[in-house]
Length: 99
Image (tube, rainbow, N blue to C red):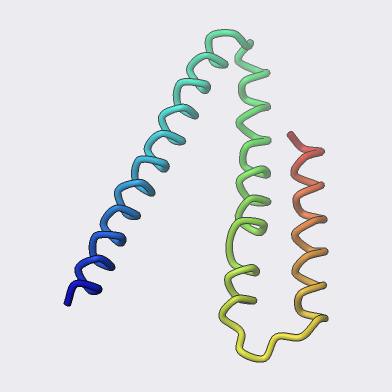
């Protein structure tokens, strides 16, 4: 029973810290967006907005999906690891070039 309570406390603590992390990231991005909007010309800010779409799309590939699918796959091979690694590397490098 004590182990379940400990696991419950760990889960609640993890949820709280994850929520704080997400809120802080969104808040910082909001403040940076306001600062950039005040500094940049409207056309330059619009260009950054268009690039943000591609950056978010590439982060979707790198951050989620393929790595989680590899973790959940039961019969993983070295080819699977290699493919996911190289694909994530290529998408990350393309994302860096866009930024």
